[in-house]
Image 1 (cartoon, rainbow, N blue to C red):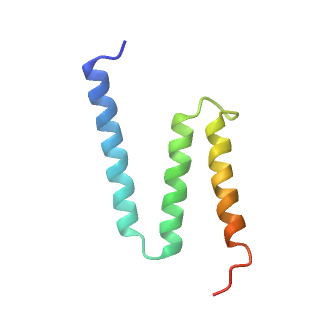
Image 2 (tube, one colour; image 1 turned 135 degrees about the vertical axis):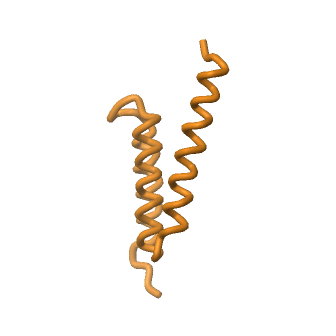
Length: 77
């Protein structure tokens, strides 16, 4: 059973995490650093939410990265 205190603690953790990554995003000095921050955030989210190394969330993240890489392979400016 989830109590009001549990929900408040979870909301506080979520706010703290969002604040942390918002600060890191704002401090990024390049697009490359920003991409690194977002990679760290995605990895932190899946690590916190997944129930182990074979959790489908890992596959979902891998699939999104795969799709992105396919879309940008051979991309020329």
